Image (cartoon, rainbow, N blue to C red):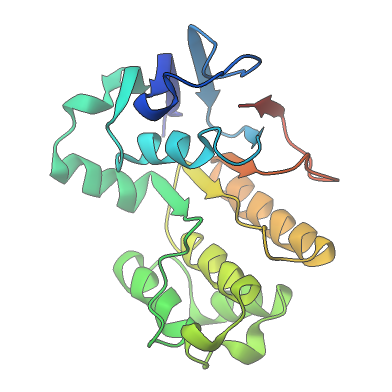
Length: 217
């Protein structure tokens, strides 16, 4: 299967047009290319457009200047059906807001996606949950879990599909350092198994998280 590229040309979200974007490796660049199978960590303080960046790539924001291409296709030309296929087969997203259903258990939240994709066995899901220390919480309703536990549920859910790129929006913000490293290694392993790229945003300089490229917004 050929590799997918993501390319920006003079991209900037409209809400950032009037802001100072000096020093940004992305908003100040004429062209930026992301390559599949590489890991990118994008660091910036709040308000610099991390969520906007990933949301544009995922097709849930279109308030931007410039152009975004998946391979040779301008994403502004994609139909709803084409976006649905991309989100099922090519792009997975760990949302900053998590987008979990509070009244469903952690496992039910994960299985909502896995039932569509059939990507992971129950054994594999349990293995990931135990690795990240939430195996004992899978049958609890998501709404009563801590935010850090919910983040780990959202990470596992995002890994329950095929993808060419994993978009991870501040997915370790409420997880302690040790468990963040465990989760990052799991994400890296899953990306490597699929030959997928990783675009991970972070508020802070990442510690001990190996990446091919580190960028600042």
